[in-house]
Image (tube, rainbow, N blue to C red; front, side, top):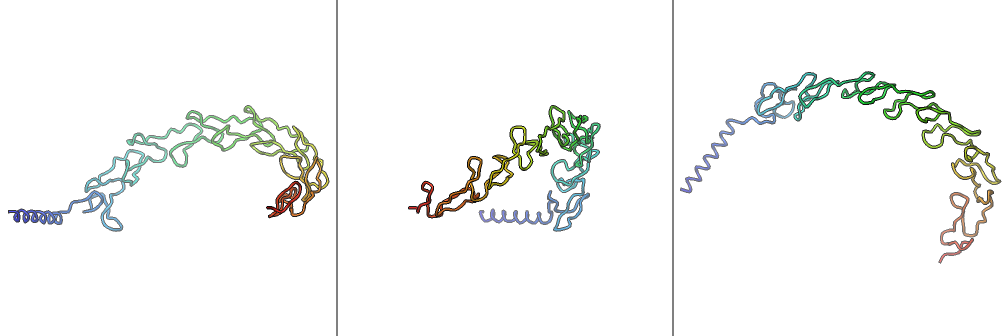
Length: 259
């Protein structure tokens, strides 16, 4: 009896395999016989639905594409996108993007921006009020204008920059509006001539007296004095200070052999 049950089970399995081979089931991944509105793949086997159709079971069914839309060929999502100048409404329709006066569609076609000379304000484009001694900029934020050279913005106007004698405009949007000419140093709101001591040269540092000592000299009370270089020492990178040689250590004003 047990032998008969095993034999019957084997016969059922063989019959199932035979039925599968004789009547293949069409898959939902583009295999099996090519249905209508489909094309054989250019490589491998199987088929793909035509543009505007999507596979359902063993068939290619048409997508419900609204007006002003086009099929994307994507297997996910709605399968379509709105045309340039239109926007998706809940995945069911495409409506025109409202473009206000003095604006134009962006190159992407999915938004707008104001014409030059206008700026966005509550979904409209309003004229930019450019004060005297200013000009329009292409910046999308801020006032939309900047002052001419020699002027600074203050309370919506452009006022002249007061540049003292022996100074020049920096043309910088940040920091000081003017700087002293070479050979002069800023003292409060003026530029005073630099008194250059012997054995010194003018430097470009924005701080300090405006001069530095030559190599081998050090500043002292507004003058440059000779550095008394002790034995077993050398001038450092600046040339205005010294350090002990390797193996020696500082002791007072001398370099002694290290312990």
